Image (tube, rainbow, N blue to C red; front, side):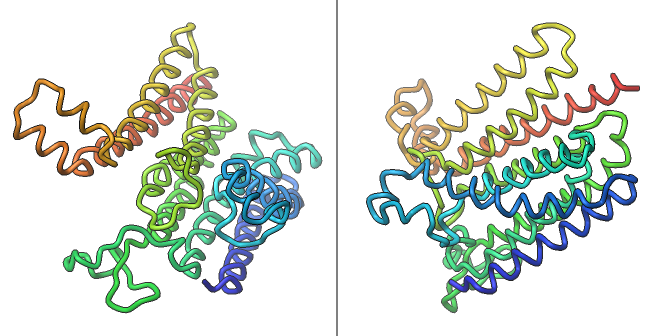
Length: 326
């Protein structure tokens, strides 16, 4: 684990993100100091939230190993990535209040810089050994080329570069955010909401494929829980803004609950914890044998479909929000 190059690349990414934020503010004729105030506050709040959330989910383990020192340990794997990003968003909100800039407008202008910072942070995980890598693909010779797999610390051992996939997708999100920034000006907050959902969506799935998961709650990764909470907040906010009746809020809420329940069940199924239930279903022996013997072949695609459904809900609701503003 090479922590110095990791933190150097992370810091460089944050500075570039602040420069992009500065540029976006200048083009929008807003106060450019907001970018640097957000960077300063974000480094503090992001660090605090990231550490506190990690400790919260693993309190028994970390305090038994390190005592109160767990709160001040600076090991990269002992932080929550999603909570760290939330710290920068909170910093932008506070900075906008201080600078007297509209919060939804400030968040829209921050969307692309946030995605750029995420891209650099994910790419920097390449210096952290197993923390950035995914499934072992050594036995699948046809995958032994970039970007499907990479050799990490040991030669001839190939792993899925989860962190680089997430970095690339974050760059795509940054480009989309810049595009939406021009087209969503009539509905403040839409650009930010869409960008955040698209940043969370791939992590919601790819977190499962990490060799080393930072925090796990039962069978569900806590980073997934945080991603789902963020996406649900964005979707419900959009639903409230475009509601025409109470059903406009109830239906999205029910769909979110259904997606959450399905994903929990599918993750238990992928681990073979639902085999006894599957065997009780009125299906042929061949189908039951396939479902219990190759659970990832159907559980993983089903989880991807639910993830796509969340993105669709966000895009549909924000599109209605944009139409309502015209």
